[in-house]
Image 1 (cartoon, helix red, strand yellow):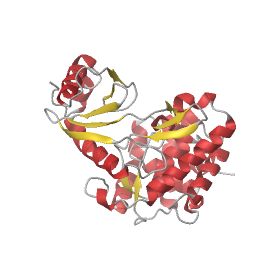
Image 2 (cartoon, one colour):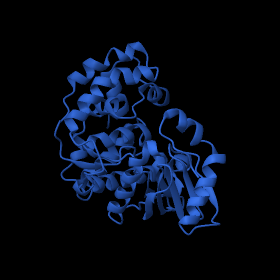
Image 3 (cartoon, helix red, strand yellow):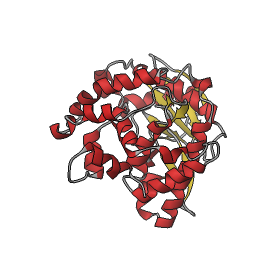
Image 4 (cartoon, one colour):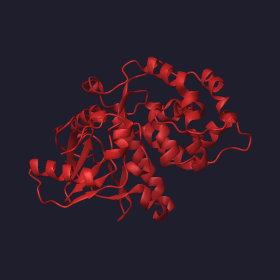
Length: 317
């Protein structure tokens, strides 16, 4: 019941349109034995995602993103019960019609950390970011090789080269001012990044929007959205951390990194070794990097230099 979606134009015409998407989601729920369950589409997210009653979540992937559906299903199965915080349990995944794939998963309990953040007392914020650091340390300590057939990029050094080659144009496309654009090549050339790091399973978008908390005591209850997972350098995951979890708060980032460095399976203080310039370099090389947006959200130092921006966003006490 869902049409082929392989181009950007088809995506824009189909994916946001509930008159097209809902009948397909309802039909698929019927095939999965969930006919008649209340179906509520989540507002956030790039893919169409529905709460199916109180216990399930259905995520749909059109043909243009079908491989992401394969990856997310595999990652959820790999992670089940292995992190100190809950991840969705994989119920079923497979193909639907016209190139569409689906992942049916359990629905996690809790409230979005993004929505809850303004109400959370400072002491509880400190504990929550420490819990995020502990969970990330365990994620990065897992053996990623069972997922190497579905998660990229394979050759990390080649990935960095491709991202570096396109970095200026990517940011120009997002409307970044020339004063910043002209600094990017020199900044990236001056920051050494390992081309063959110890391989780790990366979430790649650890942000408040993908974390759940229990308002009764403010504890971390879940992490979700593993669709863009990769295998690569641990520092890459701290782009989302610094921009969307600690949001340029030096004290919070210090606390999270300290927790990460002493977390189960994380080794000896590895988090403390991530230099601000290294994290800003990975920010510029991130697949979804949008520096103009980040500057609007987080601000910038008055001198307008990338070297200062690195400390402004990723410095710690």
